[in-house]
Image (cartoon, rainbow, N blue to C red; front, top):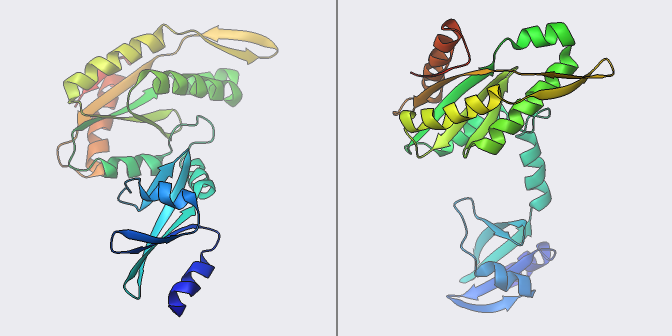
Length: 236
């Protein structure tokens, strides 16, 4: 039993349960019992009352030991690292992670960017450009039931699960029209500047390609729209 007592002492600040088969023979707090009744996900984590607990399983002297460690603060920091600091959208690394999680599932991917964004930066400066990026990011995030990320610069990437390219087209067209009708207001030289921007979108649906091939197809549809006049949505 010495090894068992040692493990309990080593994890004294966590919630602990010891089982003999299916019977709980020891628990150090009520929280451990509550956490034990929640189904764990594939990463051996439990979410309970807005906190995340890591679950560690050990077998000692024919007893099963379960340790629940509160890792909420670490999870929050990890989530921060996945976000673009300007727009609060997912960054490229996080988007690739999300795409990988959707492997073998149905989804469409969209590459898009702001038309003539360089002119905005050149005429009004990068601070105004940042306001535009934030405004567009808010529209995308609030009007798309999917995963929205900043790919880089003025380019964005969107993943919409459970839709094919035609369904995705209808969703994106509504967003594109909303963007072109939205007046963006920014402070410029102590004045309020108001103007409109447009976006061009390229769509493709997942068909067992790797991430690079998938993005390349969506990019090809995007640049076709750029060549054909911008402010439009194209399917690969």
